[in-house]
Each structure stands twice: as structure tokens, then as C-alpha cells.
Amino acid sequence: MTKTKNIKVQYSSRMSDSSGYYGSRYTAYPKIQMEGKWLQELGFNVGDQLKVEYKEGSIRITPIPKPVLMVAEPTADYCKTKRKCKAKA
Image: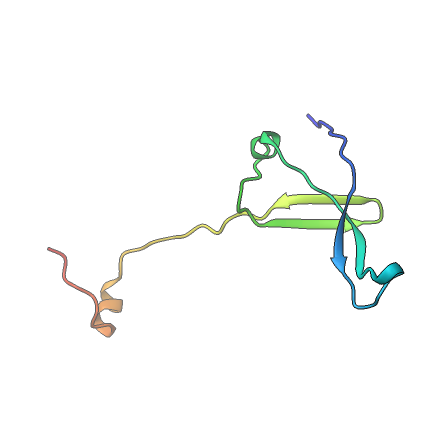
């Protein structure tokens, strides 16, 4: 089921290279900020990498899946060429 939330585009200011009105050197840029338990409930966790797809008037944010780490025992052939392998007790 699709749910909606209404949020407001905020601003973020950054220092610019040129002097502005009254010597101000900051420029305002749009910023979208989201937070809350609802993000975690949807699978967005602190530290996750995100993929952001965008086009005119639309933004889509999806978590980038974490790589699956596979661990395997060294094979006999591997141990013949590497001196670090130890015999199992």
C-alpha cells in the first residue's frame, strides 16, 4: 500500500565565490530532509547507501543492497600453492 507524507523543501546556504549584496557571500540552495521511524520501517537504516533517481518533478530513493559476503574453506589446490594454510586438527 502506498502512503504519503507532506514535507517542505527547505534551504541550505553555501558560501559562494562572489560577493553579494552587502558583502554576503552565501547562496541559498533547496534541501529535502526526511527523518523518523517510518524510514526504518521501510528498510532505510542509518549508514545505508542510497540510490537517487530523478527527472523533472520526481525523485525516487531506494536503498542499495549490501553485498553478500561468502566465506569458503581453502581447497587442497589452494593450500599447495600458499604456505599460509595450516592442517586441520
